[in-house]
Length: 166
Image (cartoon, rainbow, N blue to C red; front, side):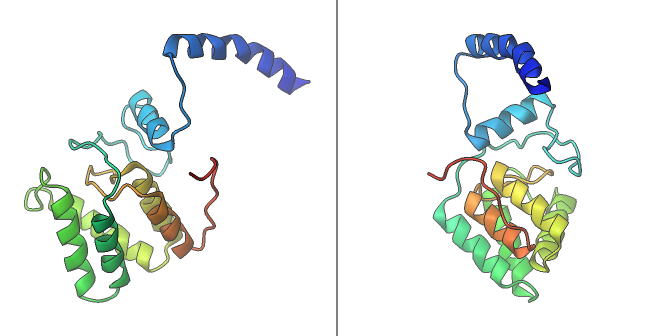
């Protein structure tokens, strides 16, 4: 009964929103962009700090970016991993030079190291970053649902899809 009353109250609001918005979307990337716009840059998870959107636009990852990230992640625990990862991040972020943003790059490296070690929180944070295409610091990452799922599995989390696969 409570559900029915809630829906009756919400129905006029939904109709008004649909009429004024023009169109609605269930695209996860577009929904995340809208959430960030509404909440002033805040991430979806409460563990994220509020950060501004990155200066460079989010675009789907090129296969070369995904392959380079996979190579860096596969080298976890070696001296090669930070070199490969930082080289990729620097190439993807030409407007965010490493020399002027040392802390942001160090945080990205630390997050990747923790995720590679299977830290659940780090894996969730990194998966969320892949789903929006950048870290909280504004550093761009490959925008990839497949990498997000891979990292979640690394942390022992079975990804749940809330929308049908394409």
